[in-house]
Amino acid sequence: MPMTLDRPQVGVAETRPEVRWHPHQAGVWVAYQGDRFVGMVEELWRRGFTATTGLGRRLGHFSTLHEAKAALEDAVAVE
Image (tube, rainbow, N blue to C red):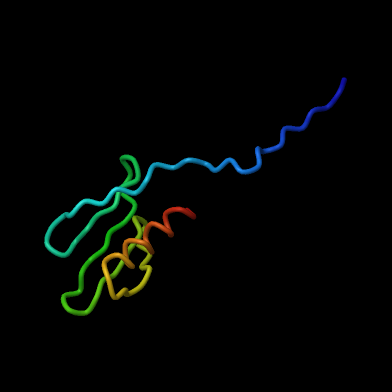
């Protein structure tokens, strides 16, 4: 009986739902991937922004909202 091995297709990326952002209240943005909460960004008034994953891992302090959101999206992509 011949043996067949399945090889993963090269160049085919796993598709994940994109991260959607929702303003929760003043200075707080929450992120969802599909229906799953994946994290949040909080503004530290006049001191920048912090990003935290849905599992509570702090990703750091960022100068801009855009940088904080990008850090969270990158962290979600590798989970």
